[in-house]
Image (spheres, rainbow, N blue to C red):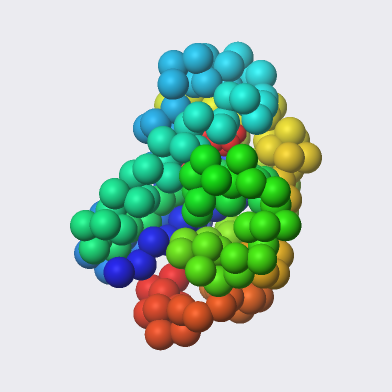
Length: 190
Ligand SMILES: Nc1ncnc2c1ncn2[C@@H]1O[C@H](COP(=O)(O)OP(=O)(O)OP(=O)(O)O)[C@@H](O)[C@H]1O
Ligand SMILES: O=C(O)[C@H](O)[C@@H](O)[C@H](O)[C@H](O)CO
């Protein structure tokens, strides 16, 4: 059973790569965009970046979905921006991530951070902007790309993640803890 989150800025390819992987692997797929409250969608459509207050309850909801699937023994892929380290902590640990001291969570080490494997879709702003220019019928205002990059805190050790470079979506192994057998399956499909 694997909980996988495909993360990155708007337009980095989370929905495309995440749904592709889920189909290939026969796993359940969730797109975090489908779980935003209407107010968040309206903000983004108006070109107003979301803030922590907008994102935190949404991330709690997504954490609950991941935990429900974990309990059911179901492997899942979630496409979710998860731009900040704190947001990724919430996906992994829910309310504990907000209530506890960050040091405390860090001390928990693999037992907490290793629960979800993040696939970080990394890519240059120009390339992603050019893709967003061509994308039609999506609520996200394209002007928000700049703020997405400003908010982004790329994952780093001891987080549990793989970086995939945007040009090829070939994963470049950065750091991950204990999911070696799973990563070889993922490499095969990416
Ligand atoms: N590897 C790729 N090569 C070329 N185009 C791509 C690639 N990945 C995604 N795209 C295109 O880029 C656009 C953005 O991709 P996608 O919607 O999957 O990104 P996203 O990260 O889910 O965005 P958002 O967070 O805004 O929903 C789409 O039009 C998609 O077809
Ligand atoms: O954290 C965020 O700012 C949001 O998740 C955005 O990234 C959007 O949901 C998505 O990317 C729009 O398509």
